[in-house]
Length: 96
Image 1 (cartoon, rainbow, N blue to C red):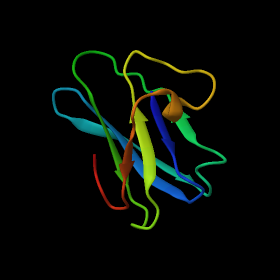
Image 2: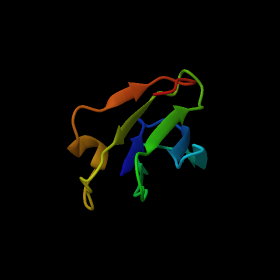
Image 3: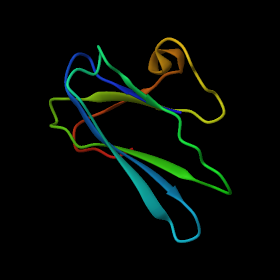
Image 4: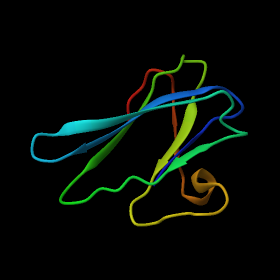
């Protein structure tokens, strides 16, 4: 599960799933005008072998975001970013 939110600012991010023997990424572009009113949450299936999920904040440096990636712990209700500990603030242009 991938969950992204901001503190009332725009959210502009790339979410990539790296999998397979040739490490070809599957990319998703996420843009939300207000990340606190409408946080982003997605379930990404990762079959067969080791996989890597990369999140890149492509917004301006003034627009940090909170990101949470969790494996095997799916949150259906509430705020998935707040339910997991402790989360990480990613400044604009950074990759984690």
